[in-house]
Length: 446
Image 1 (tube, rainbow, N blue to C red):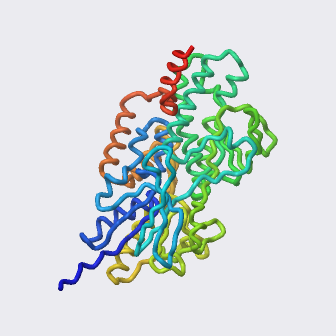
Image 2: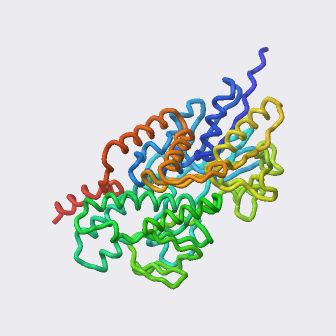
Image 3: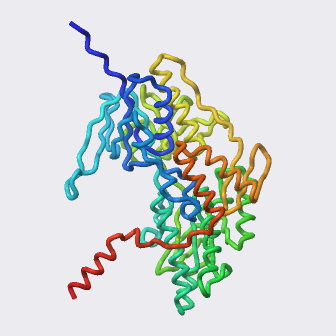
């Protein structure tokens, strides 16, 4: 009698963001054929490269090129579209809720067994109970929101150019961004730069007519970076007549009027909310050890405390920062990408009975793009600004964009944007693709 072949270990990755994708890519490189089975679960079929969202919103990069199709780049992994809805660590089984195969039917649950589990569902926007925010706020966490925001800004320029109502025109040309982190600062700076150029093509609208406001509750913007970078960025923005209000909170958004904690009130048709993120709520539902912010408690090897075979990294993991005793790694893309590499190597090491490696990372610098040929950076104590910082920002992120295919497409976008004029077309109809069809149907009924 022949002995049946031994089933290879099953590795389940929950989340297709930075950690999930980079971990899967690394595992594909390091695992021998048949050494393990990979399954990745995510509600979307693509990963979004978040650091380039602002450039996608400004039209410098095609939005399709800042997303990476999971099935295409992970040929050795099974990709399941769904969300984690339950976990049984004792039975080593995850419950994943997947969409109904037919529209109108209910969702269904899949039971996915695993031997090793990676939990990286990422983060969701941190929404505060501000009156009117749910009705009037615009998010900036996905490529869909980036495209929608670009369309919205250009639509406001159209409105301001065509209306004779002074109050409506002023509200249309007022753009408020709440949250001075990477997302909010980058999005405001890129869109302001794009709108400044676009205003040349809108009769009656001058760049000086626009009112851009960045609201930050903390003492400085870009709190994830060194203080000098935040100060330089603030000076750069204020030099472009952008208001940077520090130590200020959004109090309410009622009837199109924005009220801030410093007592100021003004009409605005654009309110972008980028005031931070929080760990995915599903992590608390797993009943695994979490910290006060809802992140999984991990050791320096990225294993969840007290759990054999469960790993975590990225925004949803409280990983000790060995360079800063008593602190955890900040929830940013730099740590996520580097942690994914260590996590994948440790999984391979565990499968092969080799020693694990602790995650250590020394922050070498920080940088951000503030529009075409504009940026600030600090690298190994050396401060850069303007074109040099902007070029460094692009070089760093071109290197980090996953897969050669996406690198080539992003590089081509940048090249074409450099030799051709900016695109200033609003494609708002993309958000309501059936609007034209429905209009014709209504006309036919009349």
